[in-house]
Image (cartoon, rainbow, N blue to C red; front, side, top):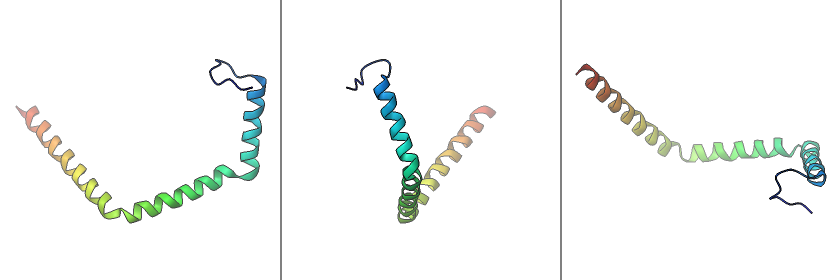
Length: 76
């Protein structure tokens, strides 16, 4: 059997990993997952656009204040 606590992979583990990768390639699973995940992320971004814009504005404002403080401190 497979021992995940072993420091090295057995021949069985390697064979299983190779078979898994080949299966994912032949079914285009990673491409499908990626496309679906991107779509879900775009929906979430659109649904939260207002909140995300507010967060970005707050972050930008905080950064601008920090820069001003550093510049003022550097001037003495």
